[in-house]
Image 1 (tube, helix red, strand yellow):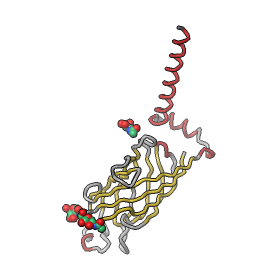
Image 2 (tube, rainbow, N blue to C red; image 1 turned 90 degrees about the vertical axis):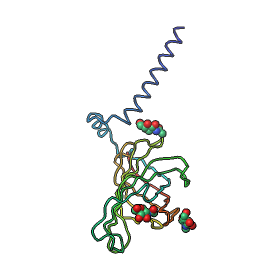
Image 3 (tube, rainbow, N blue to C red; image 1 turned 30 degrees about the vertical axis):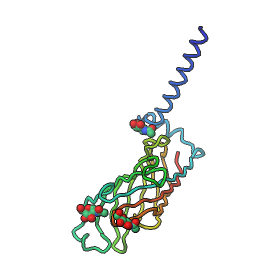
Image 4 (tube, rainbow, N blue to C red; image 1 turned 135 degrees about the vertical axis):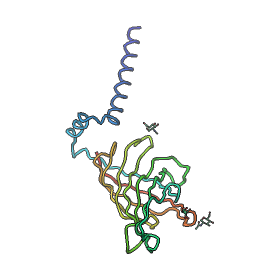
Length: 191
Ligand SMILES: *[C@@H]1O[C@H](CO)[C@@H](O)[C@H](O)[C@H]1NC(C)=O
Ligand SMILES: *[C@@H]1O[C@H](CO)[C@@H](O)[C@H](O)[C@H]1NC(C)=O
Ligand SMILES: *[C@@H]1O[C@H](CO)[C@@H](O)[C@H](O)[C@H]1NC(C)=O
């Protein structure tokens, strides 16, 4: 009888410790916890992560124009057009496949020479593995280009101190409906 109670208490303690370690990693952002994390940082523990997913863009729905310059409408490269976007990310090419997060940011037509956009945005992950973690991306890309390369300049949560790069490939594109899907590959080093 006593043994049974002790093992039950031991099991309860083990579960509490597991829950505490899980939440402290995810949510303890106090200066003390952050300093402790930084002090324990060991370059030998740098991690490598390769992610592959699909981005779904629908003009006027997941991306909307928020500003335009006085001369934008006359510009052959839409120079000065600024969009806000929140494109959903899925594990597979189908929009109904497992949802993994969002690409949230802005996209500015920032070239007088050709149609190219300056895209600062954040991959905000919502899947079980990386829930709440983010990767910040910066680059000059044409959204509708067949392929594109941009830099990963940082991250949070599971991707603290991230650096890396993103490559995208056009998977589906329809100018009439404003619908586009991109295949995304991320290579990142982080702690
Ligand atoms: C992600 O975290 C949010 C907020 O903590 C929670 O509501 C949601 O259920 C989590 N999602 C997954 C897939 O674990
Ligand atoms: C684009 O979508 C329109 C409307 O659904 C359709 O009529 C057209 O065939 C599509 N074009 C391509 C290239 O898929
Ligand atoms: C988006 O909305 C604007 C303004 O209403 C419209 O001119 C444009 O044709 C729309 N684009 C698509 C792809 O629906």
